Image 1 (tube, rainbow, N blue to C red):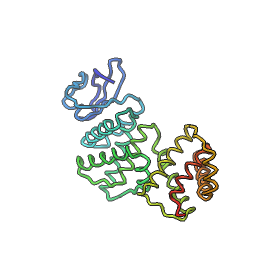
Image 2: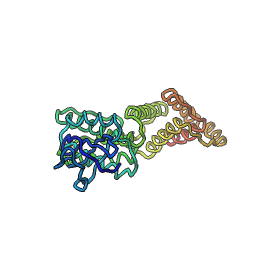
Image 3: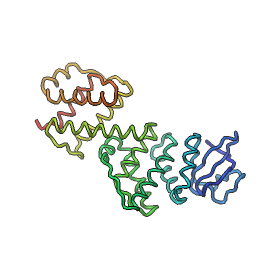
Image 4: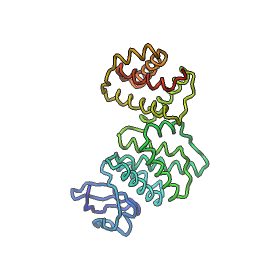
Length: 279
């Protein structure tokens, strides 16, 4: 949304409440957007490098409630963070990330200052499932550490990556965390069934996790999977352990997600399992 915007209230140097030409209230957030501005004036956006417009009413109210609880300098850095994400993604994303990521990272820094660390048990799964978001999140944490003189742990990269993916897909963090937990559980079942320890840094693990992620997405979108009856027959005869295990995993996913998986998924999953099998 483009201006002109009439300034209604200045929350701080980096956040202002404004009115559009149609008298709709919006929240503008940008580094220095409120500096030397006055209530009732038309925003001089030539003095503002970059800014975001929060349009959704519920998001505006949440953001207004959050702003007084974080420092101006932090809000300024978060504006740089959001722009870094937007430039790297080059796509539209849910404006809720302004609230969710600001809230998460401000709390993470408070915990860090209090000596309270929070481990991320799904860091590798997150990196494997969302490699693009993870790479961007690495840059976000580097920027935060540099600008705010903190040392956020690597686990925060995974949390930020989930927030980025959530904003792109409009899926909640709770939902995405459920997928990570499910895949972690499936890998444990595979290790127990095949009597192997799967290297979390190996290429076969990478392929397996990405396949499981895509299988889950196909199931939720009810997308068909091309059937290979001859291949299925061969795999069933040659690799019965992996074939039966593939169906065990599918049943776990179906129960957890309350969705249906096409029979052909077992074929592709069997091939991934065979790569992990010691026999």
